[in-house]
Length: 372
Image (cartoon, rainbow, N blue to C red; front, side, top):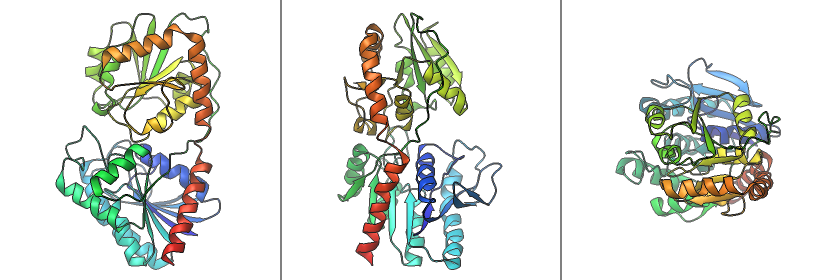
């Protein structure tokens, strides 16, 4: 099968949506012909061969950071992707277009699928449907909402990465036949723990970009006595969070590479991230692979795999009292913490790239059979 994947972000650009598409590509490309159409960023070539696939990166306006897209880059991606995609489909036939994000990737995916006369699969990933902190989020901003509705209606099939996101997509667009396929995370054996097991302090770790949606202010103010929080990540909220943090109980480690992040997880006793909303939450699975129990928000896509009292404690986002109580509960009972950590590790084993790709391939075949 020849598959054209359209995603405005693809590693090393972007966040969870890029990681999702890369995990899929790495497995798909072992047996199928895959081309990825994405944005170009600092230091990246227009075309390369990575992850077993052809990667075509189009120039966009003002993409000066790999981690974050500018508004100009989002707006300019669509026209650039349509031009480059039209050239690709003239060069060779494709069997299917798979687009990630209804905006900004969706309109280009719709145009290319129509031009080639082939099916379009859309995966909605999060902020393209709902973000409680963005003024241009589709539920707030009518022009974006109209574009999302057109893209969703024009897609042969729509996939959401969680039940929460599927429900929000239905509410926003009126489309009910939405499949749910979670994100697969490549299993990575955690490094040996370097911290003494006799350390009386219960160490929590969070890994996140320091932005408003992560709601870390309530967490850094809630660290109880006998506990310590390590914050891995950077972002525009860092100075505010450092000022709000409980003195002596929070360490800001900044952005870390993969090896250092894995070590931070290995040396922790539990993971905490109580965001206002997560469409899925790859970072939870990474922590669970390390055998960590989780404290998370009670609303969002993470509730597909986090069960209160089994592998996690789920609390209302933004509630310092409930967050502090959950941290104290984790700290007070090491045996329960160990049981929850083991349950978390077993849960994470189900979310692999191979399992995810198997579900997508079945959907590809079903779409092609229906539209043949």
